[in-house]
Length: 86
Image (cartoon, rainbow, N blue to C red; front, side, top):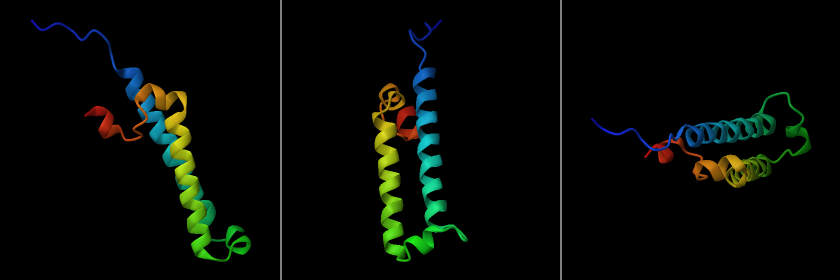
């Protein structure tokens, strides 16, 4: 008979899931806000290159904040559930 694991990793898996969900939510919100049709961002920044740069900075900022947050510290800050499961 095998002995059960000493500790459950469910809190780490949950933190990884929530961190990934936050990154996807904020990153995709930045994409929609910067490139969505009928939104004022195209009028404020008419250059698509600048809007793409702003979107990349939002993704990088969201990823950094999630990795440095308590969720990221608990899960290891991978922000990739497959890396955490491996």
